[in-house]
Structure formats: structure tokens, C-alpha cells
Image (cartoon, rainbow, N blue to C red):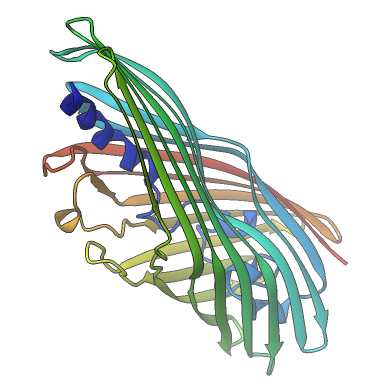
Length: 395
């Protein structure tokens, strides 16, 4: 019976706790930038520039305050034949803040303060599986997990000329990962097994981001940013308990203060303004590999903006969200899935303010190695949808 329980623990705990570590584009930041598919490096002339490219703040037309929140965020992941012959479906969803920022101009200098949540996943699950395999009559899994990354800090930009600027953002970094999971088994002979596990991980550090913008021609802007999260402290604790009908029990605890490695991000962007009513933007983001089972990831973002008139604008975007895990070199359990995303947005402008809405969706198919010690793979699918509401005011 103990070997059977360990089979289920190996299948569910690692994937439930660390499902988002392979991707870098998990939660859109800023409603206008999100509706452009994240292609914002060469624009960045509002408070969202603190996050994307602080050099763009130097060309803000005035002081501003803006914010956005996720009115809706839903993610669904399906693993084919994960529990015997039955599929395993995981869903997460919640209302989450996404971004808040303020900027101020002082001559050629611009300052900014911002708060951003680039990664957030909150999952509640309570599922029953009847007769998943011959020796198990009932399998119940109940879990709650949270994985939230928060950034907050200051930005500074300076315009050396009308066509060239430099900027820097210094963010404080926090990642909170919590998992509580309970599993209950009823075997075919009537015996029962109960297990409980929890994971708590807190990472703290800082994120410096250096950016530049250069406009070689009036209607063409290029941009470059370099950044890397620096982890200064980390605390990881995992607890597990087990009890079967015969009274056999065990309790274990594992803890670690090993500092996680983080990738270096180098991003290039261009924007083209063919007229006062049209904008096209492209970004390339590359992330280095920091573990032996990881690969270099390059993500593409494309965006277009069209002002119908001075009061209304619509936007479209396309982006990739590729997985950094090399499944052939990753120990089980692990997974790898590349995602493709689309976005749409609308803004309504008044004299000194605007209201924005952005919709983004991501989907993809991949493979997962679910069982510890086995390289057998299962098909997996993932879809997500987010709706961001934002507003800004210039003064």
C-alpha cells in the first residue's frame, strides 16, 4: 500500500507546486501593454514603462498615474490518462491586482514609482476519481496552492536628446509559494490510506533593469533592456504525513535555504509610427539557461494600435510563451509546453484620462512525465484567459 501511495504523491505534488517555473510570460502587466501582446519596449512612455523599459519614461508627455487589475484570470491544464485511464484536469482562477504606477517629469529627468505582479496562480481543487486502477476503488485529492511574484520599486530616466535616453528601475522582489494537499485512498480490499503534505517557499531579492531608447528616424524607435533577478534569501520547507488503516504512520520534514538561480533577460524592441493614428511594435525577449535541464528561451511579441479618432483606440497582439525545460534532460516528474497567445484591447480617451480594457488568451499542447523514475510521457493541454481593466490620469 505504501508503494501505491508514493506513486500518487510522485505524480501530483511536484507538478502542482511548480507548474509555472518553466514560463516567463504568465500574467500581463499594464492594460495597454497587454493588449499589444507585451510589445512595449520601444513605447514605454507611461507608468508601465517602469516595468518594461524605464528609458521610455524620459519621453512621457506629462506627469501621470495609472493602474490595472485582473477582473478575471482563468487557467486550465489537462493531462491525458494521468490517473490510470482517466484524465486529470487542473483549474486556477482569481481576481488579482496587476500593476500600479506613478511618473513625474523634472526637465530632462523623469521619475517613477510602480508595483507589478508578473506571475500569479491561485488554485483550489477537490476531485474524486472512481476505480482509477484495479487496486484502487476511490482516490480523492484536495489542494490549495498559491504562487505569486511581486515587484515594487523606483525608476529614473534621463533624456540626453530628443532621440536618445537611458533609464533604470530598481525593484524589490518577493515570491511566495504555498501548497497544502490532502489525498485519500480507498483500496479494493476496503483498506484506506490518508496523506497530507505542505510546501512553503519564500524568496526575497531585488531586480535591477537597465534600458535605453534610440530614435534614429522620427517615426522609428529602437529599445534595449537588460535585467536579472538577484535572490538574497530563500526559505523552503516541505512537510508530509501518512496514515493507513493498520495504524502505520510517518511524518517527514525537509528544509533548504539554497538560493535559486535566475536567468538573465535581454530584450530588443522596435516601434514604427507610420502616422498619428497607427503604431506597430515588435519585441524579442531572450532568457538564459541556468540549470542543466533548461534551454535558452526566446519569446516574440507583436502589437498594432489604431486610433479610430482622438477618443477611441483599438489594439491587437500576438506573443509566444515558450517553456524553458528540456524534457529529455529533466528528471521525472516534469513537463514542457510551449504556448501561443493573442490579445485585444480598447481605450477610451478624455482630455486628461483614459479607460482601458485588455483581453489576452494563451494555449498550447505539450508532454508531461508524470511518474517518478519513469520517462513515460502523457499528452497535456493548457489554456488561459485574462481580462484586465485599467485607467490612467495625466496632470
